[in-house]
Length: 244
Length: 68
Image (tube, rainbow over all chains, first blue to last red):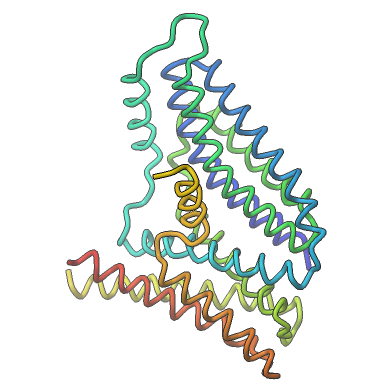
């Protein structure tokens, strides 16, 4: 199977999560100072990298068919969550994420929290940035491990995720604010379709089914789920329009 | 709530998400696929349309809930 799918899916998923983490880090860092904020980012990064380094090799030691059933099922469940939220947002049934508004809320909270004495670690900044990066990063680690593990390419998936983090961080430095113009819902939609498609492909193979064109069936699964999801968006909009 | 319960709840929500019927339906469809394959049916065709039907039902349910 081409590694291009693996790189694209992990890169896009990580880009979405990085944009959300960047909003939190920027709000805390610009409001309360960077030292403790960056300690929190670094600590979360170490936990996430260590989790990937420990669990990656452990996953690849599992027999491939068993691994594909477990990973495929997890990817189906996880991908459906992404797709479900993206469809609800695209259909207007759920508010789209607004990075500028989220940034404003975080800044307000950071301004109200008690300040540390000069020279001391600011535990508010440390904790908020640590928690924000860790929680957003956990989804990325999950995708890197499942996606990369099923193809025995965890390092490649981790490199794609790291590339997305670097790109989003660089964009944050250049823009010096939240990345409000990134089409997060479109990216989430694409990630949801890809995770679900790979999950379907692997779980079916894992339980012993054979796809008609083997690996060549994957683009057809992606196209089918993408087309079906867009049709669900159109259906939901029509239902909403008819009852409005 | 104890630490263990919070830990378990976090991972449950992380993997299953907010929509339990959607996740349960997907898990059941995977189970039926495995059963059919074990019975000698090459059931590759079952999962993609079933998941779309589950998604559509879930979205329409959310739409109805939003109107209430």
